[in-house]
Image (tube, rainbow, N blue to C red; front, side, top):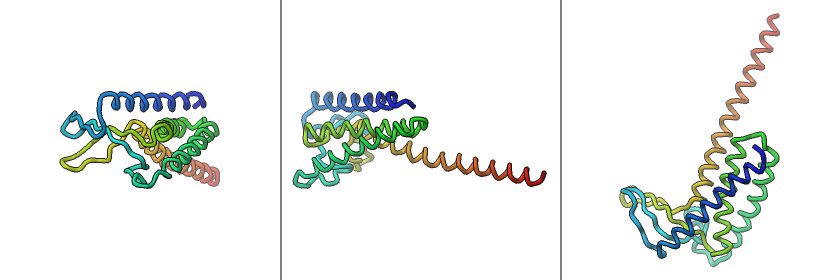
Length: 172
């Protein structure tokens, strides 16, 4: 996958993330919930920490620490997308992760927190609220895991084929 395609996908994810966060903040006040279905609400909440509000109660240093991690990760991701541009699924996965990381990085730098608004629940149990960036990161990570297993299967199939060829050659 050419680097500009990967970056375009990341830019689309970033744009969707920022647009949805802007929209939610324009129609809701902090803490407000809008029931949508029997298992999903829109809710405006802020997360000063990382995933699942990890470090959200810290004194403020986490804003810059998490921003630095996202910035460095973004640079590494762009390098990897360029280096492995022939690996389409790998690059797609990284594109989703990059777009999500940049969306949350933008929030962290400009607002000091990440805007979350997707609230899924079962009964009284609510999954921590998240956003489009988090969704893209999750999907990208899941695709990376899938890709890593499928490559092992392909490598094993290649090994089996080579072994079969050697056995046939040995019989001749």
